[in-house]
Image (cartoon, rainbow, N blue to C red; front, side, top):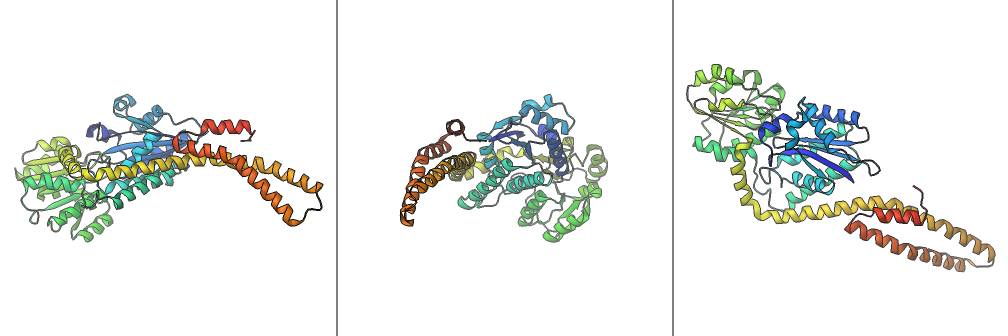
Length: 425
């Protein structure tokens, strides 16, 4: 396997770096399409969320592995930024490390909020997007399908997801609850109508919020979400008027840039509100609110990175489930690479059997020609003897291949068998 992952996440890169590299769905498709044009033989899947940007690239076993420097440059050029500005923040993982990392990401073990449910849907969406632009291939297909399987096992075989938890739930329970004693009398505005907005509305409704306003560029999607959660649909063009009347605003768009800027906010929101408290929760990457807005009187602005301490408390509370989840990932990682090595060795085993079957048939035919008076039972016994002999000759090399597949790389043994038995490619 020749797999590389190049990317950054909340573990070592701040929001300023991540929003430089963040991709909307359309940008991701364009970037994957350019990747295939640049390297037609290389596969690619791009995962971009509020907490990470990761490019998974793969090539077939007979090709050179994807170049991490080329992947980094490809990510930077997609945003017209010098690669040297982001290179120090990028991590490169190879082969086994990349596969295990993807498994952990899909199972939400690498998430800021341990056990959050959104990441699996985002991993699936990233793979499906790569399929749509013909950027995925056999290697990435196996990796992402197995990652989805791992995530489902962790969800069903552990209690990591037992109590639904998410970034919005932690943000509201740990931050908004410090400002507002109750939510049933608060005017709530949600900017955006995607999965994060839906998850936020689910939690806010549980906390008693009534008739939230959902503002989105697509009226139909806003109306759909409003109907689902008993809210009111609005246009994103009216965002400043909505903010002027709101108590709590959640930014969850995929705009790709700040849609609420300081100067219009001052003129259309601050001057009208005075110092009445306004809680702003920015869940987008790139961020929906200019950071300077948080300095305005009465404004409490929180972004993803402000949740680190609260998320660590959540992780600690769920830590007892981690060993079971880690065991599942270890089992699936081992099974994945055994299967991969078996796929590599299967053609050699097939050609080895063919190489022995051909002379066996020739010798049987020569023997039967010399012994034309053999009855059918005698001929059958001789054929069985020949089959058993070939199988016993095949047994030691096949056992060696199985052992190598379980414990290491079988490539050197495959090459030796190919040369010893003069097997064709």
